[in-house]
Image (cartoon, rainbow, N blue to C red; front, side):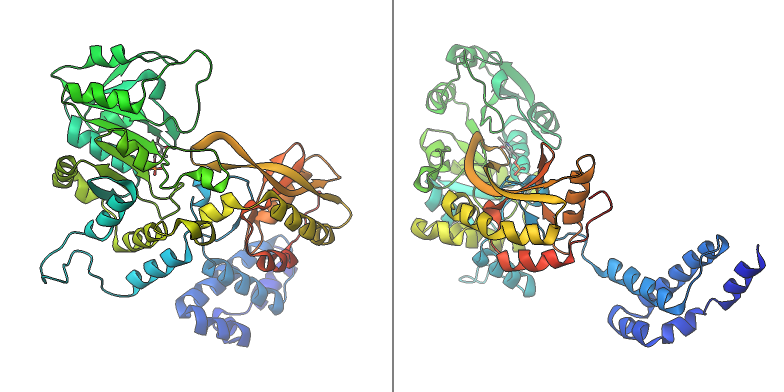
Length: 467
Ligand SMILES: *Cc1c(COP(=O)(O)O)cnc(C)c1O
């Protein structure tokens, strides 16, 4: 090793000396002795490596490096962010944003003991489903209801309870993959059900179902093909007719609605998506749907329908493995309660609030923010307000997009510049996630509510070399 490098190595301060540095001592108070000591050790180790290649250092540099190491370790991994992708229910970004009422109920349940499985009237053991059962029944017209981890769990549990070692009849046009390894045929296999496919991809008739029914049948499953649509020469059997066929053979009809909604979305200017109440009225014996899609609550799966079938589901030991905890139960109850006042849903429930925002309001926001971004980005990025289209996401109304407004950020450099620009926005203290289209980064403003925080956040923007 060169003499100069050796002497720098000898001059490297000790761990103890660095821990006594006033700036680091303050952070030791905050993060604990172990964290601070490890950050100093790690920083010095890296520096020892670098010294060999002739890098110089001073104490200020070491302190700065220790501080940033500590800050990075302390920062949350699961980061709140701005979802400006234009997909309102983005599965990778946590789907529904919860209502204030739900957040408070969840926080309350976290802080203290709750009457989760305790009946306050009798002082005896209660059931956790009791807290939402009557609400769900009131809102859907179903006889009974139960709640599990998510809709995938709901489908798994229903199939396992009603068709283990028996057949589940499904139309070939409904054997869907939702994404993230949720494929209907695979879920069925894991549930122990034998898949009996009927019809063809584009056309399935009543006689196909009728021909498949027999003593080996456990149930007929109807799946809402939520993330695609078959167009053209098609035929499917409606739920009402399917219910008649199923009941003639004394077999239950299960309708997996996927998103499902509790209100008629046309109230808010959107296209109509089947409501859970309608699915119940059409004669399905069980209906399954998600808590965090259009319903706007936490991740959960609802199973509603016939009392005897729900009782059988609750007796299945698998139910124990798929149940929800007190936190989500509290958030679910609070979310469902909002539906008792449909007039104020668009104000209180974020998913409906986002979807119901007027294009004009979003356009004005885009006009307001366009100069702010132009200012933050400088001359190398062209910023303009543009019309765009939002989608609901998570399989709800897949082909229907809603007119919206946003900002287009187009780096004049071209090449990799747009990727660098997206990375810079992802690197903000509150990351901003947009989508890249044709060389521009697009921010759809439909879901942007905290404009003040958005503006403040921009002051941390650091643009890379390519821009
Ligand atoms: C989304 C969806 C599921 C899965 O629901 P999760 O809540 O994501 O588990 C199942 N079936 C259909 C039809 C869906 O749209």
